[in-house]
Image (cartoon, rainbow, N blue to C red; front, side, top):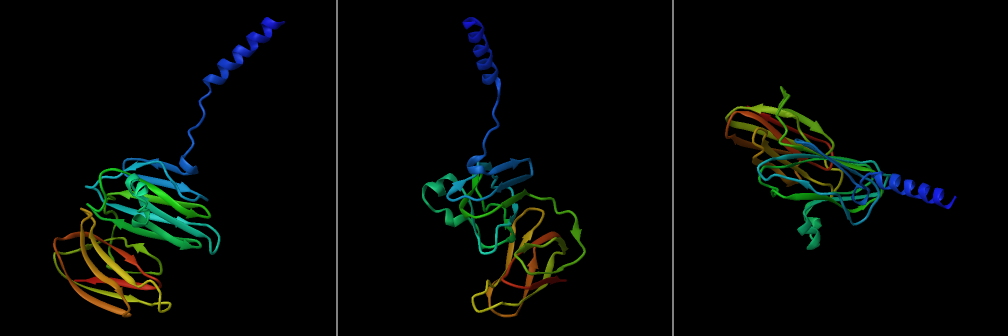
Length: 235
């Protein structure tokens, strides 16, 4: 009987040793990466970092972020390197500093990141969040419009401009004295190169600027604003 029991124990040990447990994501954060897209998802956490994912300084990126926590709950996320964590400078890569559900879209133009591993660092999050990073997205489809409007921080659809002058007009409506003011940046959507800042932290309800477009092709604008906005580029 003793020999039988020992044999059963040995068999159980062999079975258990052959079972492969699924890898745990760092801090409960999931990172899925393909050739042209990185998706990072997480939930409640404080002072934790995701697994690393590789960036390329010769690429450009559109970053889309959403947070679905409760009203007045905190979501503070940063895009950081290990060196930034070690030197406690994660605030330099801050992506969000929200209280309540929100979404945003940002551009990291060509050359603005290093060719090294990055992470999403969670300073504090009280609910589910997602960061989607698109690497050097192809400028397709291209919109027929060159006028856009919205109420949130956004990246416009791709649109065509011809080489030469373009008259850009920006409208904003501020909620109050300390509202986030309009910031508009123009990028070449083929190369990801930064072209021009069209409006920077201005309190005027309307701004106009004529921009010299360096070459014909698709372009894209990054909009940061505290309330309703409208932007256009006319030629």
